[in-house]
Length: 139
Image 1 (cartoon, rainbow, N blue to C red):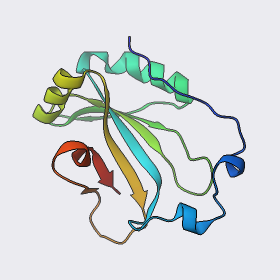
Image 2 (tube, rainbow, N blue to C red; image 1 turned 45 degrees about the vertical axis):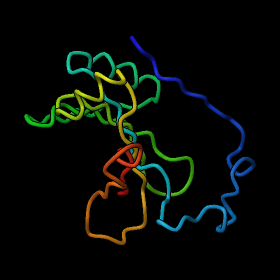
Image 3 (cartoon, rainbow, N blue to C red; image 1 turned 180 degrees about the horizontal axis):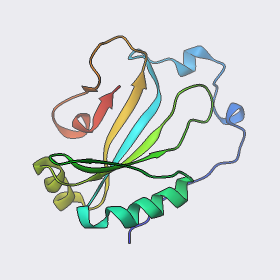
Image 4 (cartoon, one colour; image 1 turned 90 degrees about the vertical axis):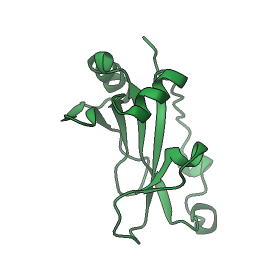
């Protein structure tokens, strides 16, 4: 089984990130942090990946199933400071797009969702339709 690579840094966050300096932590799009990352997994391997990722991040997997979209397993990972939550979504490669991406790249990262200040009524906005921009969403 493929295992994700994680690097755990125990250095105090205030020492490595200038969180107090608004000029260094404010972005024009209103980004506040990572809301979610999505990882494509083959449908027949969802359960074993849920156990693996759940143990790595210390979160109880929450299973969501949809006939059309397939299965999703959500793992809550919190945030280092401030309010809000962040999550990892293990997503069954079931759609045409997901199956093609899985065929080209294998198991792994598929999309990034950036948390922003709510300035729009739209739930998610895709940053672009091609290339890397098609994998980034604003929530």
